[in-house]
Length: 163
Image 1 (cartoon, rainbow, N blue to C red):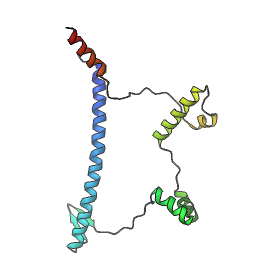
Image 2 (cartoon, one colour; image 1 turned 90 degrees about the horizontal axis):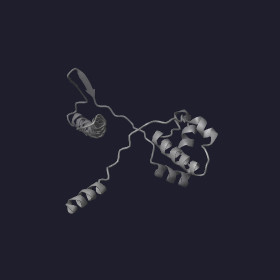
Image 3 (tube, rainbow, N blue to C red; image 1 turned 135 degrees about the horizontal axis):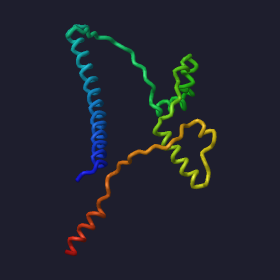
Image 4 (tube, rainbow, N blue to C red; image 1 turned 90 degrees about the vertical axis):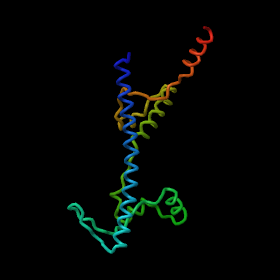
């Protein structure tokens, strides 16, 4: 007979599976959308029809200049070769206000947890300044790992051999 806890864990697993499925569907959808958008653009150019109305919506061909930051590797190479720094250049051009320092929440979590474990081994605590900058609280969570069933399988096999 299945316990209520087991049912809840299975429900939790279904939500995790659904989340992974939705993530994959989103990636696939975005890739399909991009490919179709480029195909429609080519057709509009080939048919010399820069706009069309379908189901009450107007779709128009437009050309946009896109800007994105070069890779960290390319920027490091640029700085080494020319002395040009991406962030300094943004600041020099009056664009410093768009620079946002961020820390990934998962990175912060794992780094501080590792730091805390190391400090505890030495009988120390987090530096006060750091502790004052963080929300520190305990939370019950569920850890999911593949179950190690080898011991159970060996026990069953041993039991059969004894019989």
